[in-house]
Each structure stands twice: as C-alpha cells, then as structure tokens.
Image (tube, rainbow, N blue to C red; front, side, top):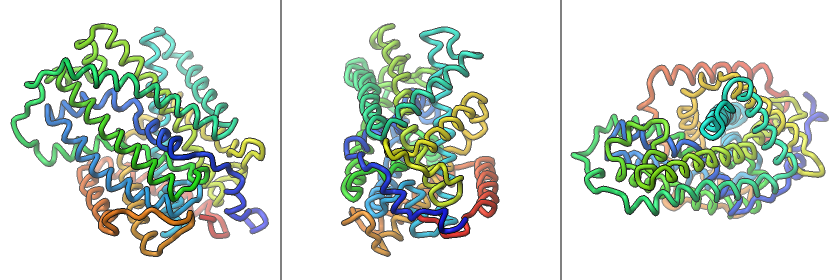
Length: 441
C-alpha cells in the first residue's frame, strides 16, 4: 500500500460532519448503555446477593466512574474517529491501538447482534410467531436495514432518532420507579450482613455489560463538535443518570417482590410491575423493554460502523470502507458492511459463542484506555483544544486500573482462555494485513 493510496488522516476526517453536541452524545451513551440488560439483570443479581444486590451496582458504578473520567480526558485530547481505538493508538502505537479496536469490535458486534436477536424474539409476546423461523430472519434483516438506511442519510438523522428513542425508553422505567415507590415493603430490602467479597466481585463483573456503552458511543469522535468540551460533559451527564436509574430500578423491584425477584429471570421488572399495578403494569414494562432494545440498536448503528471506518482509514481493512459520502458526510460503505456482518451474526445465532467474551473484552479495553489517559496527560496531547483534566490528576487512571484488575481477577480461566484465543487470531490477522505505511492514528 503506497502513500498515493492513503490520504492524510486529517483530509479523511474533515470529510465528516461534526454535528454531535452534548445532548446528542449524552443521549447516544444513554441509549447504548440502557439496553435490554436493565430489564433482566435485577433477577440475576438478586439471585446472587439477595437484598444486597444494589451494592453490586454501586461497586460497578464506582469502577465505571473512574473509567469514564479516563474516557472523558482521553476524548477531550484526541479528536480522531474510533474512540478508544484512537486514544490507545495515539500513545501506544499501531499494534496496541489495533488490539483495542479489536476488543471494541468484539464487544460491540456481539452485543449488537445479541440485543437484535432478543428484540425480534420479544416480538412474539405481541405477535406470536413473528420472532421464530423464517420470519425471525426476515425481521432481523428488516431491523438492520431500517437502521442502516436512517444512518446512511446522515449523522444528524441518526442522532435525532437516538434522542427520540432515549426519551421513549426511559419513560416506562421512570414510571416504574416513581410509582413503584408506593408499593415497596421495607422487610424486602433488609439483608443480614455484608455479602462475601468474592460474590460481590462476581456479580459486579456480570454488571459490566449493563454499564458498558460509553466506549461504543464515543466511536464517532470525529463527528463530535468541540470534543474538549462536549465529551467530558456528555460522559458525566450520562453516567450519573445511568447510575441513579439502575440503583433505583433494583431497589424498587426488590422492594416490591423481595425474594421472589430472583424467581423471574425472564422478565423481573414486568413481574414487579404486574404485582404492583396489575396486568397493565406488566404490559407497560414489556413494551418498555422492546423500546429500550430498539433504542440500543439505533445507538449502536450510529457508533459501531465508525470502528470499521477507522480500521479502513488506517489500512487494516479495504480502503473503500473509509470512503465518506460527499453529500451526507457519513461512511456509507462502513455502515452497510456493519449492518451485513451483524445481521449474519444475529440470524445464524453464532453470536452466542461470543457472549462469554463481551465483558472480558470490555474490561481489557477499559484497562488500555485508562493507561492511555494517563499517558495522554503525561505527554500533554492537545489535538482537540484545551483538554478536560481529571480532578485528582494521575491518581484516577491508576485507581481505575486497580479496580479493573480486581474485576478481572473474578473472571474464570475459561473466559480468559476464550478472549486469549480471539486476540491470538486478531494478532495473526494484524501481521497479515498491516499497512506498509504507518497507520494514521
């Protein structure tokens, strides 16, 4: 690959339209993070910790508080598209940057396919037979075709759909929390003592998927207005709202159902709402779960194609995927390629084999990003103007790394072996495909 075949990174990035402000980016983070998980995890965590389940959310929120501060500073210093891939590659070079992009892709594509599959299967509740057999395949293709078409029209259209979906998905949860407060029973929230650290750690690592999303939402960083201001504000606003929402939902569901919460793994919030408000309440939460997954799919279709765009921009994928449509200012080929890949994954069902990788992929990615934030500050990188500086300085990335290592220590050998195999394959592909000129990150 000669220099004549590679445009300057700045030229490629300038073809994108910087349209995402604080509101749009915060909505995208909320939209991707608050997916279908919040409608399922209350039962899982209650089964592991009982009434102390809310404590796992707090532990995970503290960990993510440190992590998102690192993302906020890194995102205010690096303006290239790719989010974590760009942050890590800027300071640690193309190879480590490439691995961070692979981790981002593994996490994102598995989650996108899994939620799409859950969304279509959930339609059986309202339209029996729609989410099975041939109709399942047709609906998967229709869902991704719709979101691809919206995003191909331009980043503004994709962002606008995300904002609408975010409000629609949060409304049923807000109604559940505010109205459910009057149906809670104090004895249901009593717990005999502090749970075991090992149990708390294991439940916290399970919640990583419920909190993850900022890494994918920041992938369109080349389309963010004034990154040094927008990224920190959007990240902070979104993560505070997400933490308050998750803890409130868990407490209300626990307060209504008590020990019975763990006995409803398929629809714990719908079961709580039905007990408190009757059948109409259960139906509201089932509709809310569908809307939430719809919004998640929308946010991921805006974010994840930009990872393919960044890989192609730097020569790891065919150059055509880095082409930006001069009229709509979006990477059309990358959007279509992502839609095709994730559709195939969701239809085939092979995404289930990647499920075990998602949380470990996220934690390893966060580890690299925390280290990148530390190094970006040390080098005082300022690609996006005056950067946001984390309160507490370098201590925050160090603490973030320590917390992530604690969470990783609760992973099983099977999980670590699986992610090791995936990375080994990625490394082999790197040396096969690596560009002859330096990547443009």
